[in-house]
Each structure stands twice: as C-alpha cells, then as structure tokens.
Length: 414
Ligand SMILES: Cc1cc2nc3c(=O)[nH]c(=O)nc-3n(C[C@H](O)[C@H](O)[C@H](O)COP(=O)(O)OP(=O)(O)OC[C@H]3O[C@@H](n4cnc5c(N)ncnc54)[C@H](O)[C@@H]3O)c2cc1C
Image (cartoon, rainbow, N blue to C red):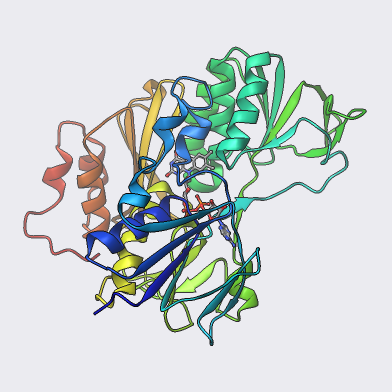
C-alpha cells in the first residue's frame, strides 16, 4: 500500500507538473507535494518568446493544466515557496518558511536560469532577461512602447526575441561573437539560413563582436561593443545561455557535473532522489554518455519517466533529443544530438527556407532538422536511432521518400 507515503517534487514547471500528473495516473494514492518558487502554477515557456510575447495569445494558453487540476488530483501545490536545503541521508527537505518536509521519494525538477552578464552597466534599468512569464510580461510591455532594442546573443532565445520584436515593428540589432546565429548547435552552413532570415526582415546582425558595457544614467541608453561600436537603444535583451539550478543538489552532496547526474532511470547518486528536465544530466543509453539538454520535449517526457521510476517501475529515458523553434514564418524541428559532424547534406534548397538538413558522421545521420517541411520527423528520428547507413545522394533527393531510407527490418538501437 502506498497511501502513507510522501512524494515531493521541487520545481513546479513542465517537468514537475508532468511528473505529478503521472504519479496520479499510475495510481499512486499517497501524498504528492509540488513545490514551486514562482507564484504561477506550472506553465510552458516556449510561448514566452513567441506568440505570448507578441500578445497574440492570452495567459490561460500557457498553463500546463487548468487551475482546478491540482486540487482535483489531490496534488498539494505550494507556490511562491522554495526548497532551501536537502538532507538526503535523512530524507528531509527544508523550505524557505522553515518547514521541514520528510519524503519517501524526491524529484528535483529545478530547471535552469539565465546566465547573467557581469559587465559595466549590467544592473541598469532596461537590461532584461527572459525565463519566466513575469519576464515575458515585462518584455511585452517594452515591445508595446516600440523603439530600438539590442539583443545580446544569437542563440534560440535571442533569435526568437529578435524575430518577435521585428514582428512588433521595433528596430532590432543582434550582437553575437560567433559568425552566424545558432552556430554552436547548427554550424555555420545552417546558421547562415537564420542570419539571412533575420537580415531579410530588417534586423541588423552584428556578428564576430561582443558587448563590453551598457551605458546610461539610470536606464540603459546604449550598448558599447568590444570593437568600439555604440548602439543607441531603448532597452536590451540578454540571451546568453542558462545554468542548470543545481545548488540544492550540490549542497546536499549529490553528484553534479553540468547538471545533476542521473542514471538512465533518472535516479541521482542519492537513493530515492531523482532529477529530470533542464537540470538533469542524464545517462543516455543510445549515446552511452550523460546528455543534458534544455528542450521542452525533454521536460515533457522526462517528468513521467521520473515519476514511474519513483514508483519503482523500471522506466528508462531513452528518447532522442528533440526541439523546435519558430521565427517569423519559419518553423523547424530538430532531432538528435551532434557535438561534431563531418558534413551537412541538404534535401531541398536552404535559400527557399523549405528544406531538411542532415548532419552526418561517416555514413550515419547524427542529427536532422526539417524547416517548413512537416511530417518527416519520425523517419528522421529513425535514421538516427537505427543508425542506418545512408547514401548522401539518396538522402538529398526529395524524390526518395525518407521512409524508403529506413529499412523495414531495421532494429531499433535507441
Ligand atoms: C523563453 C523560452 C522559450 C523557449 N522555447 C523553447 C522552444 O521553442 N523549444 C524547446 O524545445 N524549448 C524551449 N524552451 C526551453 C523549455 O522551456 C525548457 O526546456 C523547459 O521549460 C524546462 O522545464 P523544467 O521544468 O525542467 O525547468 P524550468 O522550466 O526551468 O522550471 C523549473 C522550476 O523550478 C523552480 N525552482 C527552482 N529551484 C527551486 C527551489 N529550490 N524550490 C522551488 N522551486 C524551484 C523554478 O522557479 C521553475 O519554476 C524555451 C525556454 C524559454 C525560457
């Protein structure tokens, strides 16, 4: 019988909410406590740089569950409350109001937080970051007033904010030290597609330089770059990556290395303690090494796997990494995980912004991305997970269905 057991989840966002939902769906009838530092019930972050930021959808659309869901499922939702210390040996968590909470199983779903720039002027009013719905509301207020924005960083957040700001009619300048947007993940060839997309929409793209200081009296008025440019602006958005929130785990002595280290069952180095979502650096059976990604789909699917593992089921997280992005009228999906590759093969002309790109090592696809081409993500994932040997010419040929490249009898390697 489970009814006298307490399962605690720290982090009331997508990972935590899906884990709580799964505990109940699997029939767990003990106590479920979901603790969230934010005042909002769990919500999804992708809209915060896209349609929600632009004011095209209302607040209700971003929540993971309707308000009544938590009470209806007897999930104790503690909002505006932080867990401040963990005693893993004693199975006890301390909250910021001094309350001590004993648990039988604990899930750490503490996510990630934006990396802050510590440069002169970094604290000026109008230097904004984007992680929470409150951040998105503040940024939307700025977009409503119009003017000029400088976006620091051409990663996913920076690129999506730049697109949304242009769509709202602002003057937008992007500053990034690499040669094209999204270069770290996509490489220079595919990153160039996004550079041209932003250029075509009138964004000033300043690559190969970096911000040195923000200047202004009390609010930011200009951005100074290391190559001596002075960019006048009304506000700044900084999107230079995130840090996994590992403090609680690290102070409790759990193994931490680029996130909380967990095995394929999402179990940490402490018995009974699990971690999932952006904060987890999870051993991936397909890659044979720890993988930590900051993707919506990872939060969506790891939460339920962690919940099942907490219940003692032999749940394993082995999905390939997957993410999506929307900028202007260009949508994409990306599957796989490629730190290195030896070439990129295109199916379709990237200049048309309707194509599929494959990253290859030897004769194997290690990642694939469909841009404004839909219903192909399944065969792309199978090419990767089944380690299919491919021929570049057939891969590039749109007359050869991707399904044809995956042998019907290919055994799943993932
Ligand atoms: C603006 C934006 C746009 C995005 N767009 C996309 C996209 O298009 N595609 C995509 O794949 N991914 C996207 N992502 C990434 C995706 O949203 C994240 O991967 C996902 O939110 C991770 O969920 P999580 O639950 O693991 O962590 P988080 O969403 O970071 O949530 C963690 C929660 O834990 C709480 N918390 C932390 N520490 C404590 C504590 N000690 N006590 C109590 N509570 C605590 C935090 O307050 C937070 O609410 C985007 C992210 C952002 C910010």
